Image (cartoon, rainbow, N blue to C red; front, side, top):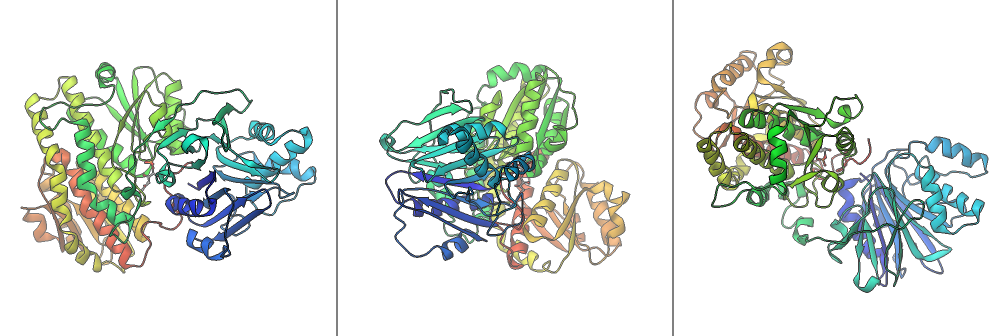
Length: 615
Ligand code: F6R
C-alpha cells in the first residue's frame, strides 16, 4: 500500500527511482512522483495515474542528481490528484517527504500548524508531517535529524518515511512505524537504496537492513548507517543477506504477472512442499518444530488470524487441522479480532497467515495475541517481513515474489503449508494413523505434477470464460474443504473482472441465494470432493431446476455432475483433503480470462493494492 523508493550515492538517482517505482507499482497506482536533490537544485515531478504517466511529464534532460526519493500512491487522505501525490514539500520548499501509512492525529496537528501560519496545498496527512518537521527545525533551531525525531514523537498512526532537505543535500533520513521499509547497502557505504520491500533493490544489492518500528536511520555517502530510536538513542541492527531471483520480478513471456504467477505454481508448490517435506523419507520439517511440537500437541486450540485470500486459506486450514490433528481451530478476520476484545490465553496458538507479512490488521492481531501470552506462529511468503520477524515461529511459503495484486501462487503455497502442518500435528498428537499420513505425504509430493497437468487446460478454460463476459453476477458453491475454495474463487473473479460473485456453502444455497437463481445467474460448483459428491450433485439439480447455468469443476473421471453441468473444468483426482490446491487452478484461470477478455488490467485492479499496510 503505497510504495517508497529512495537513493543516495554516486549514480544518477532518476533511473533507479523510476525503475524502482515500476517494481513497486503493485502497492498502489493512482498517482506517482519523484524528487531529485543536488547542492544546486530540487526538482519535484508528480502526476496522476501510473508510473508511465509520471515519466511522460518529466522533462527529457540529464537528471544528474545522485539523491532522490519517489512514491507510488494508493490514496488514503484525499483523491488521486497531482496536489495529493507525493513527494510533499514544506511551505518553504526546503524539506521533502514521501510517506506510506496513515497519521491518525493529522487534523489536530494540521490545526496547530495552521495557527502557526503554515498553509497546505494538499488534503494529505503527509503534508502535515513535512511541515511539522520544518516547524520543529525552526522552533528549536535544530538540525534535520532532531527535527525529524521531534516530529515523529508527535505522530499517532503508521508510517514509513523518507525525508530529504535542500539545506542538507548529502543526507537521506528514513523512519518506520507500522509500515515496512528496508535499506539496501551499496559497497563500502558509497551508496544506499531505500524501498518498501526488497524488490526494487535486487539489481543492486542483496544486503538489507529491515527497519523495526520506531527506528530512524540516517544515510550519508561514505558513512556507516546509523540506526537510532526516535529519541536519538543508538540501536543495533542486523544486515540480512537475501537472495532474490531477478526473473521473479519481471513478466518474462507473459502478458500479465497474474498469468505468470498462475503458471509458476508447479514450481512454487514444489519449492514450498519440498522445503518442508523430505523427498524420500516421510519427515515433515518446520523451523523450530521440535520446540513447537510440544506446544502444538498441548494447544487447547488454534486461532487463525488473516485477511482476504489468506483468510480463505485459514478456513481450509481449519478443515485440515481439525480433521487430521483433532485440535479445535477458530478462524478470525484479523480486522475484527483485533478490535473485539477476544479471549486469548496462554496455551493458545495464534496462527497468522499472510503473503506479505505486513498486513496491518493481521500484524496487530499477532501482536495482541503475543501480549495475551499466546504462542504465535506466522505463515508468510515475504522473507524478513514484520510478521516473520515478530512471531515466535515462522513457516515460509517459498512462492517467490508475488506481484499480481490478486493472490494466486501464494494462496496455494499457504494451503500446502497448512496441509503439511495438519499432517505433522496429527502424527505428533497420535490421532492420525501413520499409514494415512504416509498416503497424504505421497500425494503431496505429486501435487506439483498434477497442477502442471491442470494448467494444460488453459485453452479450454479460456473458451468457457468467453461465454461469461456479459455476466453481472455469479454464485460459487462448494462443500467441506471446497467451500473456502468457492469463496476464494468468487473473490478472485470480483477482484479482477469486477463481476459480482458470491461464495456460499452449497447446502446453504437453499437458505437464501436460491431466490436469485434464474437463467441470468450462473453458478460455479466446485464438485471434486468424494465425501459430499451425492449432496453436491443434488445441489446442482436444484440449480438446474431453476434454469440456472452451471459451470462445474469436477474430477477427471466424473460422470454425474458433468452430465448436469453446462460447462465442465476437469482436474486430476487427489485425496479430498488436498483438493483445494488442485481445484483452485481452474478458478484462477477462469477469473484471469474473463477479466482480460473484458479489458481489465488484472495486475492492477482498480482501487486495490497489494500489502494493505493501513487499517
Ligand atoms: C486477494 C488478496 C488479498 C490479500 C489480503 C491479505 O487476492 O491478495 O485479499 O490476501 O490483502 O494480504 P496478506 O496475505 O499479504 O496478509
